Image (cartoon, rainbow, N blue to C red; front, side, top):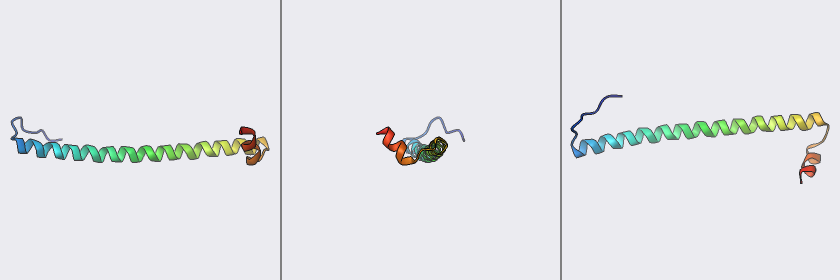
Length: 69
């Protein structure tokens, strides 16, 4: 990142800050998108583990659901 001037005018500093805010917002969007992907992947892994455990137990999904209720 380039260094900014120490003595900026009001307009220069406002432009600089708007630019920095824009960069931070883009970075935040990217982080939120990555988090969403990770959560979705974790859910899929959990569902696969659960289904494998149900299948291994010899019970049907309906049996497990009725047991949980």
